[in-house]
Image (tube, rainbow, N blue to C red):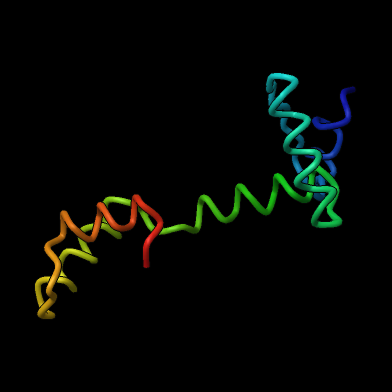
Length: 91
C-alpha cells in the first residue's frame, strides 16, 4: 500500500506536502545565492517568497488605492509625474 494511502487510512496527515518546480540553471543559481546570503535553505527561502507573494496586496488594488489617496491630497505633481519619478528611482 502506498504511504499516502496508508496515512490517509490511519487518519494521519503528513506534516508538509512536497512540490517540484523546474527552473533554468541561472535562476536556480540566483535563488540559491539569495537564500545563502540570508542564511536560509533554498526550501525555506522559497516558502517565504511564496508566502509573501500570496499575502501581498494585489498590485491593481494597491494602485487604485494610491490613486484615491492622491485625489484626496493636494500635490504639486500629477500622477504621471509621480510614476515617472518612481521609475527614475526618485522618492
